[in-house]
Image 1: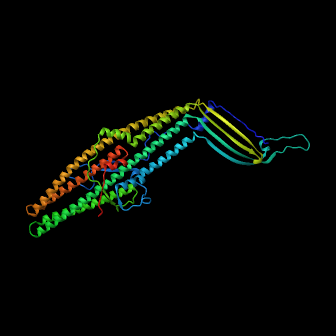
Image 2: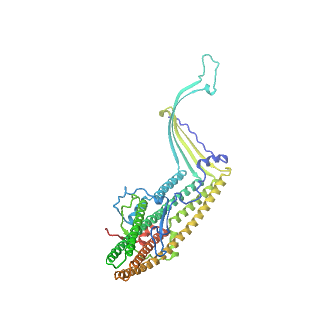
Image 3: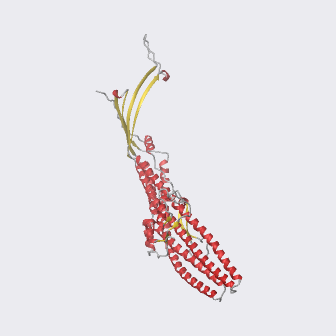
Length: 511
């Protein structure tokens, strides 16, 4: 029967000894002062003049400005083959999956979830095992051991060994009670929730960026089509004036004026087509397509009234649904847990550890041994570290509460501005429609008078310019109204689900 040697230890560490246990479990985790994601970038609708066009009145001319990672994307055509026809729904699918704004935050979510796992590991048992084989020979004289015995013929050797032994050991450590570690874990969970909400908000920004770029490309296409129609009209007037000059009805000056008008219109078409190509390349960059304009937009969005909702109710709805508000609230929760962790550094903590091993010259001649240790750590003085951790955590909590108040005000402002833009754009669409109708009637009457020889081509050219301006006003107003709907979807939150009720596409027929 084998004999097993065993040793059992129970220790209680108080005061300075407690600092050892405190350092092994770690103090409160310090959070960054701001809870807002650090990848930067944004997407938003702003009002500015449309390049390359001239309008008769000061219409709403908004555009979508995208910066940072939201302006780029990973290539989407490998996993999602592209037919060359792009609808808004497909553009959104590609953007949500491959736009770098969403991709970057998706990786941040993975990182934060991994940090939660790391923080939780401090609360769970840690088990390790090891196997070792030792072969040794020791020179006792080198350690200062010189032993002599005054007996004839007997001498103690100065070198012992060689000898060998093996060890098979399993160790266990477990935190029993440590509020600092527990609150660090809770803070990590709140931070992970905040990153998940930030990813939802990034999806809303991608929806705004991609949807806005799609609408801008449609508006650019409409300007090209309108300019082409004006060029066709200018060519018809030039042809008519040339015939009248041949019959001696018009002077050469009138023919030259019409020719200048035609050439000017051709120059404008070149500029507008260039702008359209750039808009389509920008849309391709947002959605992971090849940066080219060699594709076709299949949707159109004619004017349709927006659903009516009370502004105050919309603000309240946005405060409940906006993911960035939820993210900011989770960041406040994380800061509050971090403050609790810092304050808990002053409290005692309890941990247990131990090991069991088999040790001997070989497995057949091994003996068992084990050790069990219980540790009570009571911090008495840590050089002001706890007070510093608490002050830092209090500053972080105050900052994140201020950021939560700020984002709530920002959301309310975005909702109210979207409603103002909707109302203004709807009014301008109505005016632009009437203005275009009157301008077209005036042009028809003016051309009839020119054909009758009552007037020359100057008044016809002026009437054409009025029609062109009225058409651009209508294009810009419809674009502004659709973009205001898109901005409202982003302002209310959950834009991906809300957009189909606000923007109802019509399929453009194949050429």
